[in-house]
Amino acid sequence: MSLRRQEPSNRVTLLNAAARLIAMGGPQSLSARSLAAATGMSPMAVYTNFGSMNGIVREIARDGFKRLERLLMLAGQTDDPVADMAVLGRIYRYNAMTNGHAFEVMFGSSNLAGFALTEEDRQHGRYTLSMVVECAQRCVAASRFTPDDPVLIAHHMWIGVHGTTMLELGRYLVPPYDGNGFLEQQLTSLMVGAGDERDRAKASVAASHGRFISNFGPAM
Amino acid sequence: MSLRRQEPSNRVTLLNAAARLIAMGGPQSLSARSLAAATGMSPMAVYTNFGSMNGIVREIARDGFKRLERLLMLAGQTDDPVADMAVLGRIYRYNAMTNGHAFEVMFGSSNLAGFALTEEDRQHGRYTLSMVVECAQRCVAASRFTPDDPVLIAHHMWIGVHGTTMLELGRYLVPPYDGNGFLEQQLTSLMVGAGDERDRAKASVAASHGRFISNFGPAM
DNA sequence: AGGATGGCATAACACCGTTACCCCACGGAA
DNA sequence: TTCCGTGGGGTAACGGTGTTATGCCATCCT
Image 1: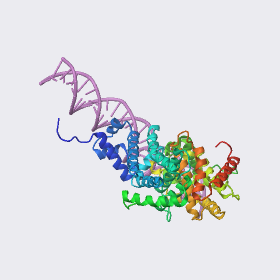
Image 2: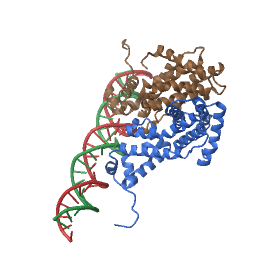
Image 3: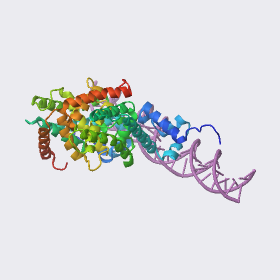
Image 4: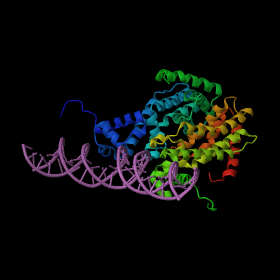
C-alpha cells in the first residue's frame, strides 16, 4: 500500500465537479456527460456512485443544507434574541446570494427538470429551521414576542426571509427596491408582526447589521 | 368563404393543449412531441407559432398572470381596506393551489429546465402587484398602516403570501402546520407588521375569511 | 390563371438520462 | 503463486429531448 495521501474517491470527485458545474453555469449545465468530461470518467460513473442524476442532485441539495446550517450556527446567542433572529435572517440571505444556483436546486420547484427532492431531503431542510425555533423561544422568553408556538413563529421568519430571497433570485425585485435594503425593512416588520415593539425591533435589527458585518464582511 | 364559425387557430389549439398537459402531468410532461401528439400536428408547429419551446412556456406564464389579475380584481374595495388586503392574499393562495403547475412555471426558478422568463415577462408579474399597491394606499389613508411607500408595503404583503405559497407547493409545510391555517396567522402578522393594531388586524382578517368564502366557495 | 408567400410535415442532428454488456483490476482463497 | 469471483467503470446503444434544413402544398394576391 502506498504511503501517499490517497486521492479523493471518485464519488467525491464527481460531487465536487457537479458543484462547480452548477456554480458556473447553473443547474442546466449539469449533465451526466458534462460531468464525465469534467472528471475524465464516463457517464456510467454517475450511476455506480449515485444511482441516477437525480441522486447526485439530491446530494448537492443536502450539502447545501449542511452549508446553510453551518453558517447559521455562526449567528451566536446574545442577550438580545431579536437581534440574534435578525442575524439569522441576514445569514440566510447571504447564503442564498453567494450560492444562488445551489439555492435554486434546494428550493426551486425542482420538478421542472424532472429533478425531485424526496421527503427525506425536505426533512433536512426543515431541520435547519430548528435553530430559528430555538431563537424564537428565547424571543418569547424575553417577552419580546407574543407567546405563541415557537415553531409557528420560526416559520413566519423563515417564510418572510425566504420569500424575499426567492423573489430577489428570480429578479422580481427591481430598483429602487433591491433585496439588500428590502431585507432591512422586512426584518423589522417580521419582528413587529411577531409581537415586538416597533422601536425596540428597529434597534435590534440595526444592531444585528453590525454583528453580521463583523462576521461576513461589508461585501453584502 | 364558409359561414361556419371558424375553428380556433393552431396557435390557440397549441396553447390550450400546453395548458392541459401542464395541468395534468406538470411542466415536465410538456414537450414539442407531446404537444404534437395531443394536437395532431407536428413539432414544427410550435416553432412557427412560438419560436421555441421557451416561447410557448412564456405564453403560459403570461396567461397565468392574466388569470391571477382577473381573480384579484374580484376582491373588491370596501371601507375596511385591511380586510380587502387579506382577501387579496387569500385569492393569491387560491390561485396557486388551483393552478399549482402553472404557478410553478410562473415563479419556479425556471432555468432549471432551461426555461427562462424575459424581463418583459417579469414586468407582467410586477404589474399584477399594482392592485396590492392601491390597496396599501387605502390602508395608509385609513390610518391602519404606518405611512410608508405603498409599493414597499405591497412588496411585504406579496412576499409574505408568496413565501407561504411556495413553501406549501414545495411540500415544506408539514402537519400540524398546513398552509391553510398558516395563511390565517400569516395575514394577521403581515398587517401588524405593516402597522395595524393587533386586535383590529385580527378582526379584519377574520372578516375577510367570510368575504372570500362567499366568492370562492368553502372548498379552500 | 398564375405566381408568390407562408405555414406545416418530414427527417435529420446533437444532446439528454439511462442501461445492457463487457472488460479488467483488484481481493481473498487455495 | 495462482486462480477465481466480485465489482467498478468504459463502450455503445435506446428512446427521449429541443431544434432546424428541406420541401410540399394550400392560400391569397395580382
